[in-house]
Image 1 (cartoon, rainbow, N blue to C red):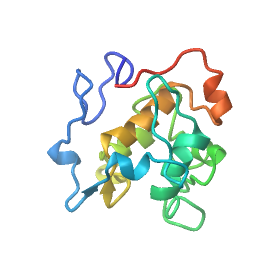
Image 2 (cartoon, one colour; image 1 turned 120 degrees about the vertical axis):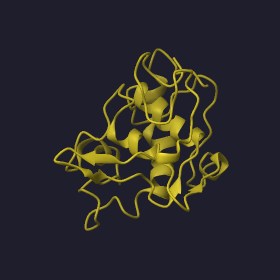
Image 3 (spheres, helix red, strand yellow; image 1 turned 90 degrees about the vertical axis):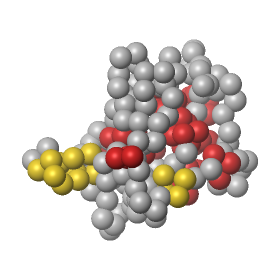
Image 4 (cartoon, rainbow, N blue to C red; image 1 turned 180 degrees about the vertical axis):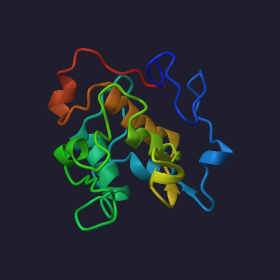
Amino acid sequence: VRGGVPGVERPGVHAGGVQQHLPDAARPGAELLEPDQVQRDGRGRGQQLADGEIPSYEVHIAPIVKRYCISCHRPNKDNNEYWMQSYDEMLNTGENKPNITTGDLNSNLLVVIHGTPIPDPKDPGKELIGAMPPNKQLKADVIDVFERWIMAGMPNTAADAAALPTATPKP
């Protein structure tokens, strides 16, 4: 199913699975990142997904994270202790962990990269986690790589992804 589990609502996505940029999710001055800025060849920008290809951390996610997330999501930065320098850190760090859960399109990471802050349950007027990246909104194609990775079980290596029996559909 494009966009995940039937009946699961996600911010900015309607039932047909089409990305919608809602006014309340938009950040003033946010620059949209073009897919070709992220999905390229081996120059640290990731590789474009082929039809049915399952993304892996090492080939697809790590280059995106390196380019857009690592500058803040590392030790000694204001980031809710959510570090993204390695596969293990993405899965196991953060004050609000788990930030990503296999098969969960409402994982914290996906919600905030869709441009929707997560409110503080103790004070709903405050943001617990802000929209990410803070100054640039990722394009739908880039977010799709994260979604397909999470729905496929978050494989670490290309070999892990290739060993999975079912490919995730490309929209």
